[in-house]
Image (tube, rainbow, N blue to C red; front, side, top):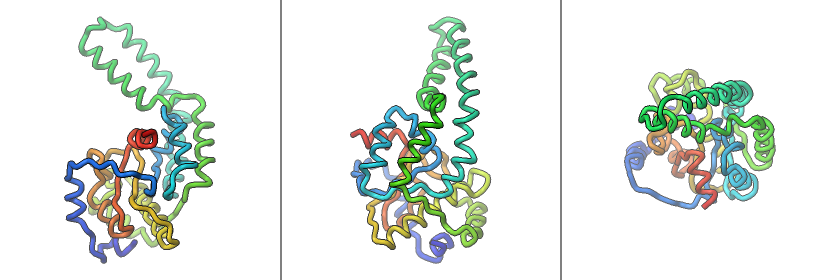
Amino acid sequence: MIEVFDRQLELPALPALISALSTAQTNRPFANAAIALDASAVLRIPGHKKSVGIIDYLNAQHQGPIILPGQVVQEFWNNQLNVIDTISKSLQKNFEAFMKDVERAGSETDPALISLKAGLDDFKDRNGALFHPDMIRRTEQFLEGLKSTAEVPFAPRQALHQSAEHRKKAKTPPGFKDPGDGDFYVWADLLFGLLKLKANRRNFDRLILITNDAKLDWCREGKPHPVLFAEARALLEVDFDIWTLDKFANGVAA
């Protein structure tokens, strides 16, 4: 893995760029894919409108590996849990008050008001689950189920420290738009865990990361950054896809 990160081994960068630029749509089955979850997915799955189907699929139906990178566990505690426990309570109170003010304001035919209300409704549709007062218990139950199905790998930190520093300076994905090296270690943990599974003859035919992170240091319009795609190909000999939680939920329900 270090040899790939240091570019001591050839990286299929040009084929990865061509794949990223392609507009062709594929609907390949994902039953044998390695499915990875990031912190944003873990946060939102328990409150998703299709949570029952998603959780049942991850806990009992999926045939390939399920990966929860060790760095995700750390970041969930440090950041995402705070969203559930504190920020969401304040957000719910302020959101509901603002919605009432919007509904009282002006004419219902005012284009600006209509646009504002549509934006608020869309925000609530996307994030409403975070307002639920029972989210902590739901999240605990979801994680309890993952204990028997998910791998939680940690890549060696000291061995990768120099790679993390160099990638940040060179704007190598993932995470160069954020402070710190957290996203890099999510990626490193994920690849490290899958390499161990391959060494133990655990087969999978593609890698899918479930995330709502849409920044360009991960993906563009649903296509993974070519460098990440190339690293996955070089190390694991499989294609790499990035799906939103909604896309995954729809695939599970299909």
